[in-house]
Length: 142
Image (cartoon, rainbow, N blue to C red; front, side, top):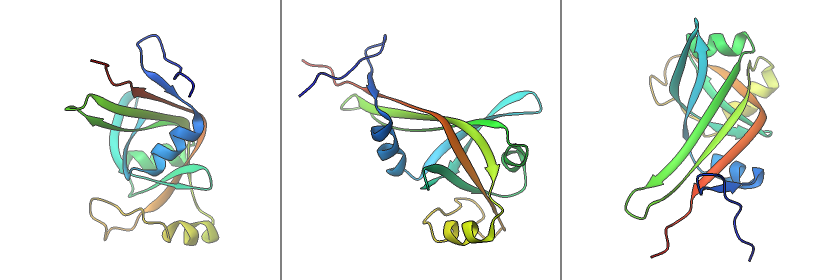
């Protein structure tokens, strides 16, 4: 077994395949983007579809970022304070609205469900990744 590669802070560096596996294991992430010159981070329910992170959103700042093809970041993580283990994955890319009917039909079959007001019509947003990085807290040996 090879030793994990560590960063300057002693965190294990995850490879892209591990990052994608962790992305697929969680339903909620946070999207970060710039809205009217200010940084904003909001929770979203996410899924993976054809190698991209996807989510639904109603009209508002998240949809505006997608319509304008703006750069965004999606972050997901998990932490166990008792065992002092956890991980974090960051996806950087461009937000794009999905407007092709066949793609929307395919996306509607995913298990991605809005966590607030599911009855409000939503638009699908796709994040095409430019970069996927991840870190894991290496358990402390005692």
